[in-house]
Image (cartoon, rainbow, N blue to C red):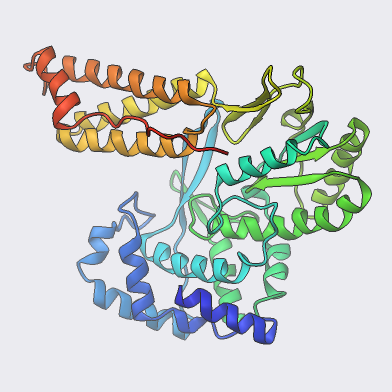
Length: 416
């Protein structure tokens, strides 16, 4: 909060930001270290626990290297995780020390840019989330001026952010060449994969702590401001809702929507980006028309019911996916020797996340099924597992019902 307030005061007074390297001090870096989660290490294999053994000396050395300008991020460890569509998503995992530095950098960037972002931007922002974006869409749709929706997807966004363009954007508000140089070092860091090094010529690695805010900054200039000044002047009753690199735009006519697709393709090409045309389409959507098509956005199927009300419901496929993810995680932890209690705590953490995201008032059946089916899967796993197979079904039932119950859905669901 201190960084946010100081930088906002500076920006309001001078119209730009300077003297950012003072925030890379012992106190700030130690604080950011403590906020890190103990996740997979980077190329050096150093975990959070390892780094903490000599925390004070490690932080002192880090501060000295940053202030002298000799600090250089280590290579990024590349790995791939499966996506819901069966494809693989590339992740770049920084070292523990680089995560500490990136955490401070991210806080600085959020403090500068979050107040500058437009109302159409919702992803990875302070006090905004996916439900905020859906609520905004509800407000727009209920005005009755929307008849068509363009649902767009940017092809490989994080892999194609142009470094020169990004640095030019940052220099508009940040007049600290040392901070800009530090960002450049991170986005240019080489990628290590299967024993080989690959030069990073474009993009910001997903998995890096500064990638979300850098992505927002890039699309703020490439898309949001352009839409707000030029597209709104071209078409009546048009609105943009963007969640990171996913966005939808509402229009009064199909011809307006068609013209927009052509215009946005041209605009994105200026920033070395392309639409994923197979995933970009025009959807007939009008709250006064119960024959409107289904809009899929941010994990929800959005449709108009027979009473001309908007409904936000997650799909059955998404339900199966979440149950499988939770059950697989539980079984994996159990097989690795974690206690049943720790495994169940993890299950409840994951359920809590699902309830917070999908627990809207028009999605109660999905939420209840998630709770019930997950409970059944956990019961089956425990019943046949080596650790707990000596327990009777009644004992397992009592464990899940009384000692550490599966987290039940909230009584009151979220009203969008």
